Length: 484
Image 1 (cartoon, rainbow, N blue to C red):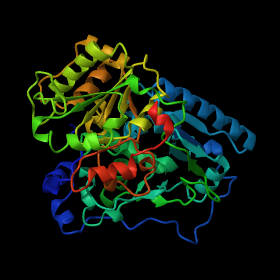
Image 2 (tube, rainbow, N blue to C red):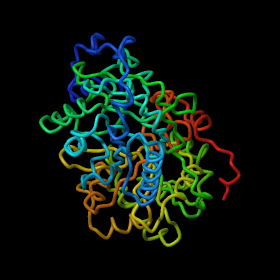
Image 3 (tube, one colour):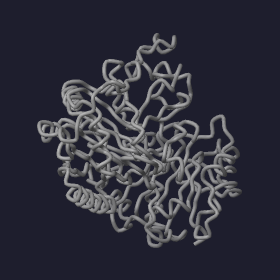
Image 4 (cartoon, one colour):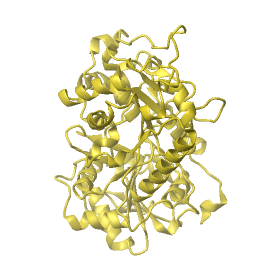
């Protein structure tokens, strides 16, 4: 089970120190929050003749997996065709996964020096967009033309937390609404002067944390720089739902790639232990177990009433790497001939298997796929990415085969299984594929307007909540196709 998202406020002071925030200022509510930066009403608007699409670098946050790469290549082609028809210049359109061989470029900060070196002298803006974001180029140009390009600007659709329950958000625990970060679904932009300064910082200073957990929040925190940098400026034309004057809109993180894969093609492994048999397993049985075609519970003891399978690996209080690799071996030995996919979840994970099976139709099980909510460790220093365990880890049969044949494995039974898997896949050049519909935390831990909540695939943890109610409100579907 992943250890990196925790609502236990007892550990908050230690986490604040780890992340480099002042404990005294945070506990007294005197955080150094810059006054929200807005465009003065009397500022002159830069004319379109001074800012064209040729001054804009558009970065599509693409991924290396073949499904995503193919989709984004087509999106790039269509955007360039639209620009040619508009006659207002041709933007530079880049696919993030093609910028370099550095797997950590997805976290944006490691990619900034290269982006600025290649395009900073000829461009005025860098605009970052999700794969599923749709951009009206003429409207985007009108938005960007309102802001003086010689100044530092950070633009986006503003989100904020309602409460600080995710560990890296504790800097604003007294007033979580005081800090804004961009909704990636709507796109966000930085001016070239800001990109230049950020690039220099990235090259000459270490991040306050080795972990990349919540990308939009952490990018905004880095840009804000403790109040020394710009806050996010809210741009109403950066939209999710279509409305008048929108420069961007958003479709969905759950694409329609055809009918869902069959229940019989997805094997579900639930990690549990004796102390949670009576507390957590009944929740699984009351919610999502009935949607599974192939499922086993793995515990440290055999309990025929569930039933559970003992893998001969003692229970550990953290990490569970030994248990996870035993699951991988059992899957390959017993189920891989008939199942294309392996899903590994914790016993306190809530998941929509019908939505997952619809998503899996987009992927080829003959390709090595590691899918889930992507975290990173030491990405600035060339570290590795991994799918966080609590949100659910999905592996194609081919990925399991490559992993087991490589000999890569645990350095101890209680090593963090999700991180070890990520390190192994990085060494094998198997990309970690991210989908925001997997959630390491509970629904209430996220901004209410976050697009990934709409068709969520998973949530994690049962703290201070009724998990059955959470499942029914957020994850339960009645689509007849789900019975396939």
